[in-house]
Amino acid sequence: MSALFKHVLACVDLGDVASSRQVVLAAREIMSPESVLHIFTAVPDFGRSIVGSFFPDDFETTAIDKTREELHGFIDEQVPDGIRVQAVIGHGNIYEEIIEAAEKVQADLIVIGSHRPELKDYLLGPNAARVVRHAPVSVLVVRKT
Image 1 (cartoon, rainbow, N blue to C red):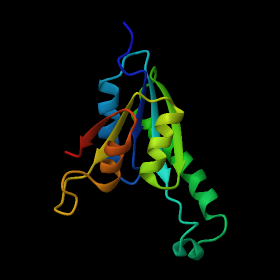
Image 2: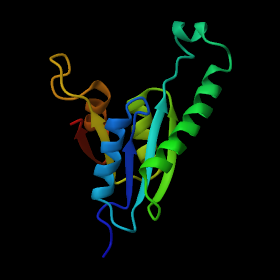
Image 3: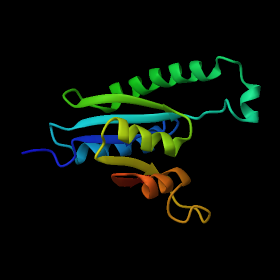
């Protein structure tokens, strides 16, 4: 039997491990043994803004290296052996990086978390809402329980 979803992009926030764990679990539930799980996280790009001037010159490189370490640690803890997995790191605008990563890995599904809605969010957080609107593939939004 071939997999319904061959390449699943699970978008995690390493600052919110509980929500990220739920995203990975949801992704794993709909994968087949032939599927590849691409676990994505992003490092925001502060370099082009006034905020970027307050950080050392090598801040972004250091942040990306540290994020890579943390993402691999997260994968080691959350993804059982036997699942084909790839770490993917974006750098820039979060929702744009998710869309770009989905295209690069040829994802046929994006799994993303969303925090509990507040009045200002209506239903989804701003990044999840943009991904849902602009993604070239299906998107599964996992609510934090």
